[in-house]
Image (cartoon, rainbow, N blue to C red; front, side, top):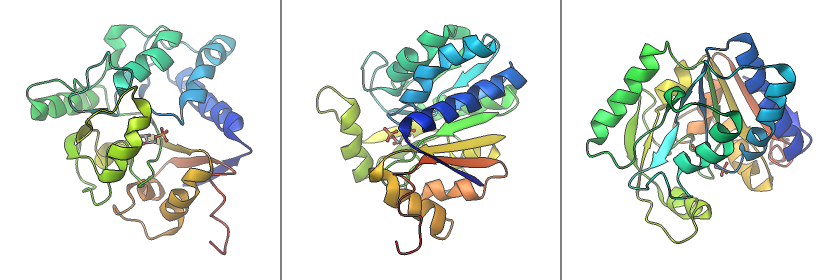
Length: 244
Ligand code: F6R
């Protein structure tokens, strides 16, 4: 794992956007799995202009959804679906055929999971995963204690995720289950970038990067990955120094 500490959120967003554009310039047919959430917002806002400046062509890329809140429809502004459509796909003019997201309203969630696993396999695996980290150390909705040998699966969200997740919604919303790619997808991805910003992530970043690797802190698997970068800003890195 490489550790990159950026000055602030803007520098982090810039570096993360560059990493995505670099990858698509090198491989226009890349399979990308880019998280929703507050952390990557700044990077996504930079992508269209960076892509134009570098003539990165996203038309042959494939986009895979990382996770979704079960039962939350895609037109709900708090859904990952809605976030990705508005923050990522619309500005980059990504066609529907390029996008594979979980249907959180599907009647057979197990089939939904297997279908996503199949798409990823048929596309030859994920080239780049860009993930955030939850306040409890989750990646996607891989909550503390999750098995690391699972592909897509449905999870009971833990208390922290239910509470913190309310920040994405306009009104209080029941968030008890999620559907997510598994840590096996994370570990099998060709490149993994974990991003974190701000003082509120400092403690979970310390735990992920300094405590023993294990699924009690799912984000710690970033250190087991063969080609990973933890890209964090100074505030999120604040507890990495000795003494914390
Ligand atoms: C979102 C996702 C979550 C978030 C994490 C951090 O698709 O998979 O794991 O990345 O909860 O969220 P933010 O960036 O809002 O702090």
